[in-house]
Amino acid sequence: MITANRKLKVILAQPRGFCAGVERAISIVEEAIRIYGPPVFVRHEIVHNKRVVDELKNKGAIFVDEVSDIPDGGVTIFSAHGISEKVENQARLRSLPVIDATCPLVSKVHKEGQHHATKNRDVILIGHASHPEVEGTMGRIKGGVHLVTNIEDVKNLQVRDENKVAYVTQTTLSVDDTREIIAELKEKFPNIIGPDVRDICYATQNRQAAVRNIAGE
Ligand code: SF4
Image 1 (tube, helix red, strand yellow):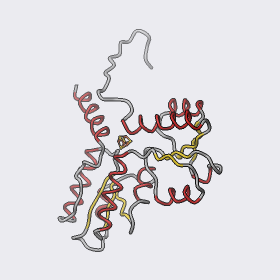
Image 2 (cartoon, helix red, strand yellow):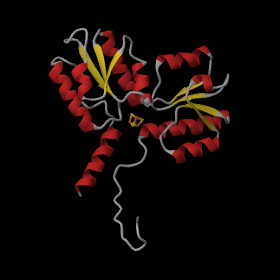
Image 3 (cartoon, protein in one colour):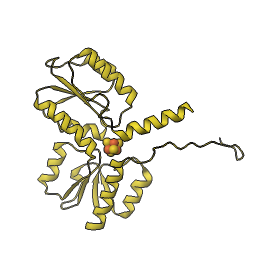
Image 4 (cartoon, protein in one colour):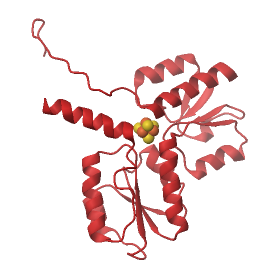
């Protein structure tokens, strides 16, 4: 418990707050409400922040888990996390008016994975199961993706050809944890192709570095 006269030192990390991808997605929702009028339907919470989500709800956004929760003709916004082809097709089949707020840095990872798949490489995704970004990325790469979350997963991994393997990563991972997994992958598959930790977006890396600096103070 904090007593009334106890002094606390508050250190603000720099940078902090929302990344550019989330700011962009929030603006897209606000603009969509302004242009088309409420309600607009957003698949997945645009950001894990109750205050922002509540503000957008008050303005006329309705957050849904699935495209099937959106009524016919409802203006549909896909969150910054990105979506699988299956979800995109569900919206297309119903001719829903779609605005895609997928962060360009997530789209970049999709493209990397798709490129490796066209080269007939087994694609490994380092990420967390059931995270919306991971679901989207896995659903964008043809031929299947091996999801690894930890060193143990790497040890158990079986691929078609050990010389034709590539990896991509979720954009919001711990840089340190990911480095360890990549090192394990490189040991197991010396010819593996990948982006090092560069798929982890600059906003995530900068914020982790800022917290590390504070912890060192
Ligand atoms: S990839 Fe980075 S910038 Fe884009 S939404 Fe995710 S955390 Fe934000």
